[in-house]
Amino acid sequence: MKIMENKPRIRLFGVLLKAALLFVLFNFAFVFVNDVPAGKFSLYNFLFPGRERFPFGEVPESYNLSLFDLDAMFASHILTGTEKTPDEYRVLLIGDSSVWGTLLTPGQTLAGQLNANSIPACGKRLHAYNLGYPTISLTKDLMILDQAKAYQPDTVIWLTTLEAFPNDKQLTSPIVANNAERVEGLITTYQLLADANDPALVHASKWDQTFVSRRRAVADLLRLQMYGVLWASTGIDQFYPEEYERARIDLEPSDEFHGLTSLENSLAFDVLEAGMSIHPNIMLVNEPILISDGLNSDIRYNFFYPRWAYDAYRTMLSERAGARNWQYLDLWDLVPMNEFTNSAIHLTPAGETHLADRIAEAIQTSCNP
Image (tube, rainbow, N blue to C red; front, side, top):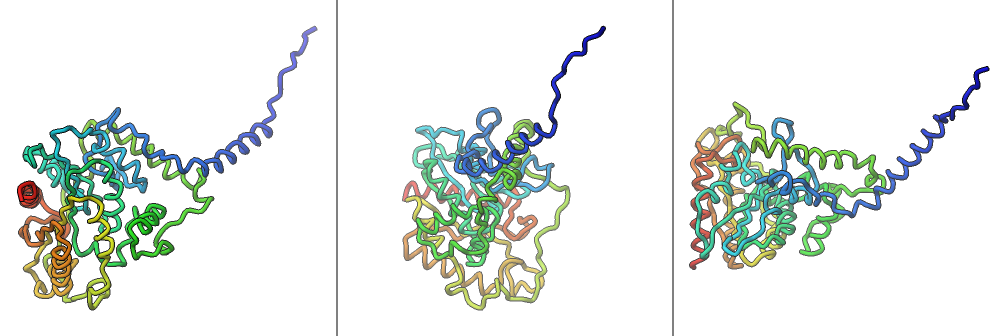
């Protein structure tokens, strides 16, 4: 007679219940590890070379992506993995997409061209690091500059333009809006006029800090590491279309600028003042813009700027820089109209060469005043 063995019965419901409970516990426990700077743990500068500019991209072909974790952005950057040597004159470049280098390879950017020329500066070798990021806001620049000060710069070159100044632009950049705690810290530290309770800032609730709510951010960190393989093997970090729409030369017959009739009390000079106080050697640069000679160019310089607003801005900025004895370069008309690409602030490689030459000259002059 065959004896039947007693096989243990798997209680599926019990297993599923325990799994569900463990997931719920993990989900809410994630709230308590949010203060751990996970973004600082990176394979860049370890398994992969550091990126020459901050991660930014919206399509897979860029081998890149946009994220809101500033720690992860810095951790992926070559600056984090580069120990400063005694003969290095370290220059940090702060600014918008024109500094980051839209449609330019890393070597064609302002940083790339400065580094390619083996420029002597103050008895050392100049090395520039590209900390530009593609949105236009002084507060975004201040947020990056505040973190970058820890990397021992000898000088900071802050390139900006009028579109970064309006009060209504300060908190709308996605990377600013999604770093509410950092922005609140800046407001407190530098006594900025911005409202920490502004609805533009994304304030995370406890539920927003659970794993379920933050799974996209976690996935982005993992994707950034995986893109490191492609970055290391190709050096590609943005999508380069074969064709693109050139910056507009023929303009609308409008003198509108952010709904303003005057720039008085409408520009975030408090943010500029804060940034200029961070390091003792900051050079402020009013970056080149496209100056149109097309239709309605008597009313507007370009898509961004009516003449009245831009002229008033240049006067205000020059007066403030002079009164505070800032290092200031006004390079607004440096680059000819045909050396802009898809925007009134994006330069061709040749346009970047014009800019790099003037920046290098200004740095060397500051070494020997």
